[in-house]
Length: 117
Image (tube, rainbow, N blue to C red; front, side, top):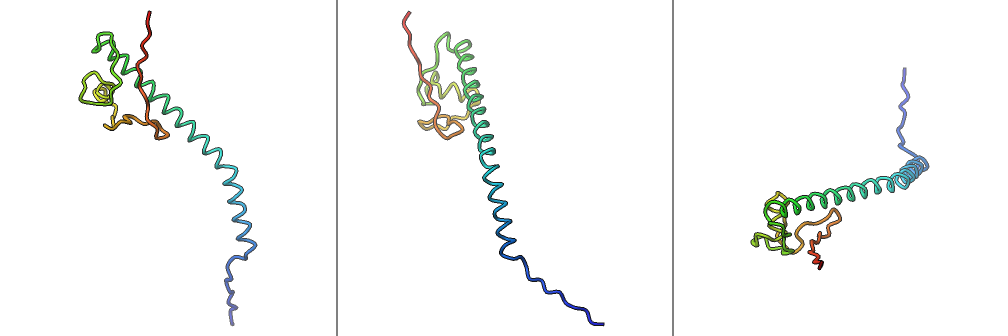
């Protein structure tokens, strides 16, 4: 008895195009949804960063600063600078002028607003 050999020819061009089209449609539908999740995660992280830094500054004012806020210097060698205060409380300070960056890669800015009574 002779067996017939079945030749494997692979996929047709039509089948490949259908698969590529399905993948493209799925990417178009799912990519914006994924991007919104990452954007919300960045926003949540930024809010948490700001909350943490605010708590650190308030603790400094109450405990070490004798009612005074830290200066807005990025020099970690200055003991009452925002950079030194953040480093003492475990926030990684990069040491350059940017200090701490947000989830989008932009630096946070600390400013003292002086108001008169």
